[in-house]
Length: 502
Image (tube, rainbow, N blue to C red; front, side, top):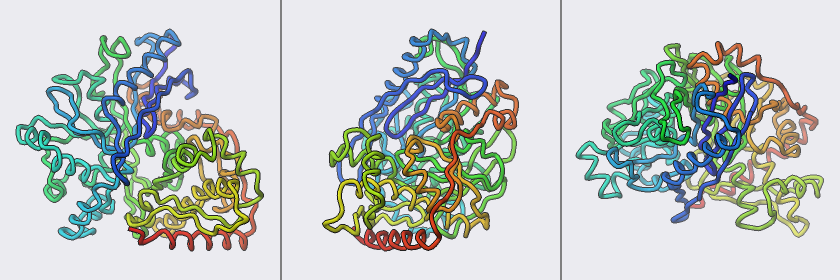
């Protein structure tokens, strides 16, 4: 009987379920968007119940469409929007509040208080992260401080916290009274609560943020042969399948791109943009605005660490142009619009809608469009929006080279935006390195599938996974160094204009 591995991809804007075959190819998939909730400027939320219901929907859709039965699925891996945080009652499964999304800036004042009370170095030394509203710990604290029932039930030991993969694993494996309350090391490393040296929750960090350890999930390897339980016969799969692999979305993309060697890097162009560089079993602590994070951990092997540059707004800028401005009707139209002009017309778009992430970490920044003249038209704005992703990526690669002394030789890319030829060619030009797109661009989901399949032995080794990887297209740089430097200098001027707005 042919077997597949299933990946549940819990993204910022949608949930997907994908079945992969032994060669790492997509057999079938389904996708469903969930609502983006903006209660106030800078606040971003999701309904965690909707996310669970949509997860069930896409699973059932694939199972019905393909006729695949649970016993034909070897295992389930999960990948997720990482820092988005849910707090719920362990007896009822009811969330106390909407999930607070990684983009949300409501904890900015709390973060400033933490820095004032303890200092950036206190957190950075232990976690590899700056104190920022991006991460999970302050989001949990905000819910406990602002939702009375959560605070009361926390004192009774009835409250659970998890990032989105923890929430879904808990429901998949039984929910109230039965579900496994777990997270993997890659997601735990994004909470501001994990000690990177010990890979355990750190009491000093918990005390500083004000979170009790009873809320926290057990920390597991990303690839765990011991498994965390199985799906339920009366659940969306209608059968029992081991759940045994999980990775935060960007680490999953690294895994799916088979960047298993020190010095290998990938960039994912999704809602945000995330560049990860494998630094091996050694932590490289950034002094140039990057994050030190856990890449992945396979069973009892040593963890693999990464340097990461996180960009808040990438594909979300295209969505904004579609939904808020109405310049385009579908996201895919932006490339054709950008092709109506030969260059950006000296227009630069800094999409700091929720501040700037790496390497700046400026929550006071806001979006700006600079260089506008009567000559500029919507084609130039479209091109400037695409180029913003590439410029922000260059900001990060320069910081990575300074931190790691590793020069980028090539960059593997994935995510929905890599189908955009204009963006990919400009990315190669502005970085001055080849850009390589794989045949399977759904590398985030593929990485989650690989984690689960490695745990069960469906795939025997990372070498087998590397043999599955194949190149689809390559872009080579074609811009002169002088022109490249001129464009980048103008981008840096635009960045300066976005700062000190709040």
